[in-house]
Image 1: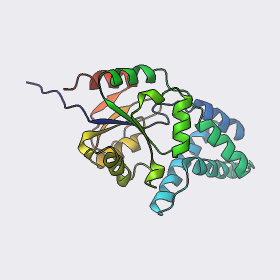
Image 2: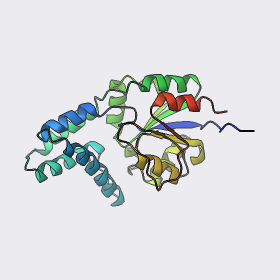
Image 3: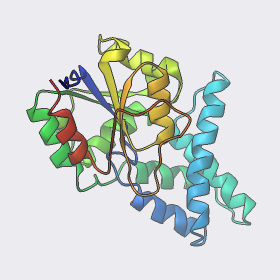
Image 4: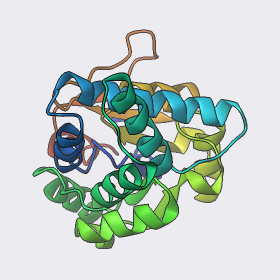
Length: 230
């Protein structure tokens, strides 16, 4: 007899590229980088890389600040000059005005109606998180909004996932991350969390990480699996 998995006590959602589409930001970055498409992924990879450099060095700079600095670095390597002020304005403003993917509201509605507690957990700072969720029209879905700014360590540091669980007064094993980043899902699993992966275009699970409990192409499909849990 097959036993249905137990429902997680809290569903934690990554925000950028999981709930919100980065296309408007990427278009602005592309324009600054003289429409060189290959530099877009390099910019975001550099942003993630230096967020880990900052955290592993026991420092903290906001995700927007690191994104702007990364943009300056990529631009300079390709003979493009951009001031830090301009880079900050581009990255910060764009990060706060991102649309939700078309499956997000329906998926969140299914989970909310089924009684799940929903929490956003992002590498963005507290102010940016609040603004971007409000601008996307998603505030009413969430029971709490958590930024890593409060703990000073970017995901996927284990300390950050443990902090989030403790913040919600639950154990790691009662927590589930829903994310479209293989590195984020891997970090959550290694921290003792459960995880669901949304395989948005261009996103893959890290093959060396523990097996992910749910792997679906959009949030509605993830929700349909979770609402069948006992």
